[in-house]
Length: 241
Image 1: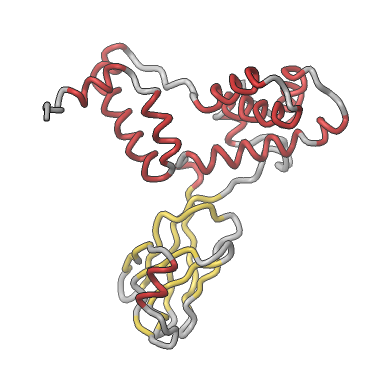
Image 2: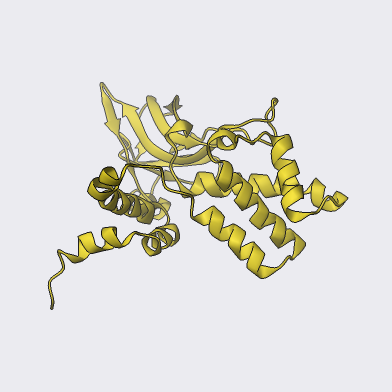
């Protein structure tokens, strides 16, 4: 069942058996916190955007979109697209300590919550294309009370919100822990027995590698939840020391 903000709010009240005014006024915060956790834990292809902008000569900064979450790529049009390499700000500062040293930018990084930094400082005006993950409008703020997460991540949205609600209520730890576990461990997609046997182990290891590159904590949780077949598929290639 898909959620609207109205039905999700009522479900949270029903599960917690709490309709007290202060609690009800904070339900939007529980839901927003859960949405942020979901969007920062996994890469959803539905929330990708491409935008163009301009790097200005002698200015090493580029404004971020207001809905920016994290980048996939930044390309510069220099008689053909050249993809910049993502680096930490410290690397760029060390490689190009003087902003007056200019050239065709090779690197970019997140400078603060509103801008990127590039290095070296642009020696001209360049059109750039940013491919990034964006933060969609919250179900708590949409005009019709619906959202992609409300339609497609119903269990995660409900149980994450309930976990936040129990933290707010200072509720029973075992119930809060169960809601958090339900949020952390979504049900895998259905597959036939033959498909599970043939493809599931490799799919699990691919997902584990992707998770480790983005959030090691989430990756280790995935490893603990792997099926015995997936674990055996790796152990077969291990040799005794």
